[in-house]
Length: 118
Image (cartoon, one colour):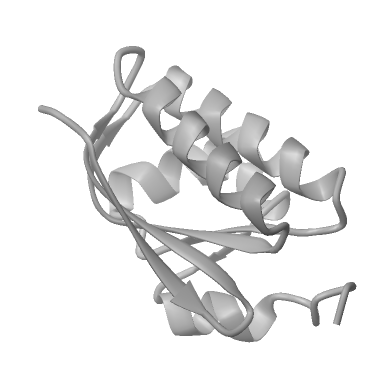
């Protein structure tokens, strides 16, 4: 299944609404979209993963790469609405502690720190 990525602006950051399979073929698309978005205007990033049907190790690697890019600029990655299979992978890998992981975008936004740049 192809990956679709839509961007929404929020006061504390940007949300990428992702749907489809996050795998070896599609993970680079997510990384490119996330990095392009945050390079334009550095800020927190939330991935709305409620539409992600499948996530393999390439998807996890994409989350790590995006998270590292954001943290180097003082920002955080949030993952919202992950389905049980994706959430379990995040928990088993320990990545649920590296990112802000919550059930909804709004919940993630409340757990993100204030933007260091104001």
